[in-house]
Image (tube, rainbow, N blue to C red; front, side, top):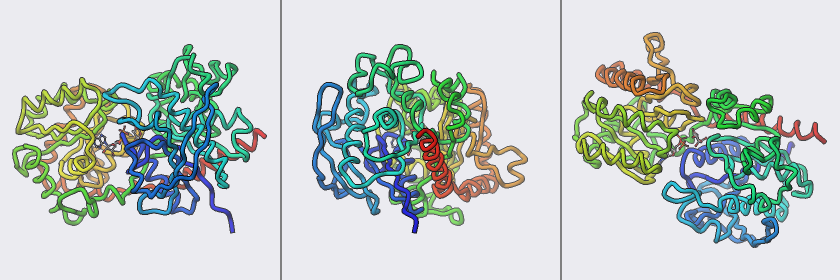
Length: 492
Ligand code: ADP
Ligand code: GLC
């Protein structure tokens, strides 16, 4: 019998243990789907103080010294199991690095020693792999925080005692891990790599760039975003690097973990529902309106938004159009945290329209589920969106997405044109230009459509029937792993 493929997932986030956004959900969902498909997949996570060690039954498996350039620190290693699964999760613990309130920073400001923190993590992963008898076929890295691993695995032949190929997935090209050149020695990488074809970027260290140059294969989280990031408009300064590697770059649409995000079984919402019986959705809407100070009225459309409040999410389009949207007779249910500018905007809107705008600032998983379940439509006017998960969650909950045609939003939502409606394939409202007018026009289309209950029901049901499960993505990742192995073999 064939050996199962051994996949080492290296990630800075993993739902439900450590999450700031969709990356956690994506890695959690992909990991479970790969395990279901028969892979031997194990996850390596920094031991943030927020990780619930009891929930994963973590036990100590010893400690190891890791080099940080000229100095050396000790990391503690733990092994546990992903909740409700046999999947091993390893924690790399180093109190000075990870015993902090945030994952990457606080109050919108990054920790200044993030290069050091994620070097400790990455070196800890290698130390752990050297000590266990487990030798992965592929090390699959996610975002800049893990992107030193493909570099080390290429340029340090003794990093591991066995051959392994590397895949780097870009979840968001805007976050690159850029640091002072003086910090390079921490990583153990030599000056010979500090070149434009290596890890150097305008005189600084760019960790993601290093990973993009040295990983055997690159993936990103939708086909459209894979094409976009090769252009100057979306390339965040790295489009040239990505064009150079276009034959090794694959876009694979994220899926949804329907064990967590399904209105038929969701543990966070007050009533459950299905595409056949939407009465529970009406109860969720009522609860959302009641519990969050909105006027309780089933006839008023509630528009939801849950997001990291970053420029990416298009919150300024909402700011520019909120008065007009309220003027259409709609209500807004908003949850987010991040950039103080946008938090202030949310507060202003709530003060101006106490019965029409509900605002919660902070990170609140149950409320995120309630908004997705209770709202009628979901707003995602993103400037760019690598994949987006919230529009996919909304589809499943009969909450019709209003999205900008970019990245994964363009690939997953079918605009309600007369033709698409006639063919029953429309799932949402899509607009193109990043302007308040274009966004408002799409919101108006949604609000008018909401008034025709039968037509709205058909839109909801088309979305609820769509299948975005991770099962669909698994063969594409398996293919990426095969290609990565072939690339590595070809270099030998
Ligand atoms: P991104 O990864 O860019 O933040 P996604 O749409 O892929 O966008 O995923 C966002 C995920 O983070 C969703 O699961 C969403 O519910 C969650 N999320 C974002 N902000 C919050 C918040 N303030 N409270 C709870 N969940 C949040
Ligand atoms: C990023 C992107 C988002 C994507 C998520 C998971 O945070 O902003 O679009 O869905 O990663 O891949």
